[in-house]
Length: 293
Length: 293
Image 1: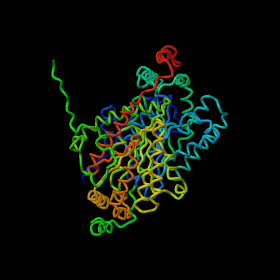
Image 2: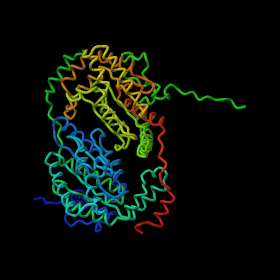
Image 3: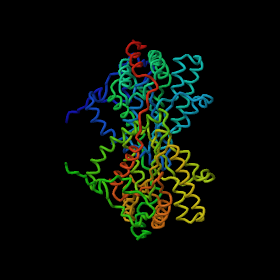
Image 4: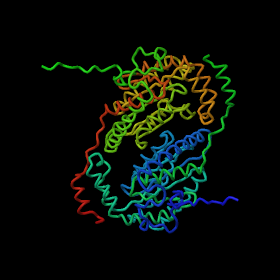
């Protein structure tokens, strides 16, 4: 009898969704933003893996898009949150850029306008949800409405708790309606943030990304970390989990988010819709009754 | 005295915008959809050129996006029209896919819904116009509202003429408002359309792209050619020109549209906005008064 062999999966091989899942004890202060615990350990390895990831993402997304057109109800929502320079824009460029732009719905949420403020904080979010078959990408999100008020003490604690509950209910409804939600916290160190702010100021073609107000926000770095800890631990649910992505290394951040998206689409297992016609009949029509013959 | 040398630019080197511009005498029936009159003459050459085109497009688009965020008012609108299988979707995948998806606004116009029908035909178009700094891509457009009625005799000739005028006025207003309009007619032959329809039916992962109604439209191929001739010649203006892109070869079509887009963005010459702050002051703040020091 042949010996039974078991391939030992190393920790490096575990899914990104398992490695970076935010659990009840999560604290950004205790997580190294430069860590690369799973997957590639160099930029070159990451680039090599991303080629295959891109091909699979592209194929899955095409099926997903077709499924949506064919009457499917499922969609994907990728939420990106993180402090200035954490790389929300770069992630969109490099990860969302791997798939057909026709199947993407990208929405940026800036400081709410006066008109938006007159509505419930989820009002503007609802308007940007992806349609079936689409991958929605949120550059900031409804989480701004718990993070900023918490840091700046704008709303009482009881109202914050109400918002956490409303967010969980909202995301539960989305999931029930067929939306796969993937929330990524792009986690960077204050040192890396400083480097990137300096780089923005030194490079004339990057100056448009800098705002003098960024330093006032930077002064609250640790309060934001605490606000993220509270929001993420309260709102990382089985239907809408949060992932904390080490983002001090851009190549690792891009790789990890691309992998997460691939795992999410793979779990969904999109399927091309059954045609509502008989392909053989149509082929015969085209070959024999071609109107232009 | 040195001899004056004149570099003779071959016809192959002329801009795509000059080669494919639709003039008053344009007639699709007289244009070879398999021609490759300018630029690369093979798929490999096109692929090689596209690398550089992609890099330049990406750089120009970033500046354009920054310009828009900085208060600029300009936008780009790429309109794609063509019969079934002419490659509107493929062009979006391969050309729009060259730039950062965050700076794109892609809109598809299908058969108008009952709600849309109750409005003027330009109503739904207005709602999808790109904001400043964005590249809008229309997969079909307001031209459906002159092409289909013309082919199917749905509206009297006088009303069609009114629509052409309204389109020209609308596009003139857009241009006056800062929108660079690039309209592409993806021109294919009936033979190539048949091949692509057969391919869609034979390949299970392409069947979702086929609709039995496609054959009824195919039966009107030459009437559509005539409708395109009328619409394009009436609505190819200096502010919003039409280009007829030979689209029997996918690689040539993608190359030509990418080049057109590059020429359009290059003409605009987007500029990074001047910062509203003093970079030196901010650098000093960050280096000396860093709130996290």
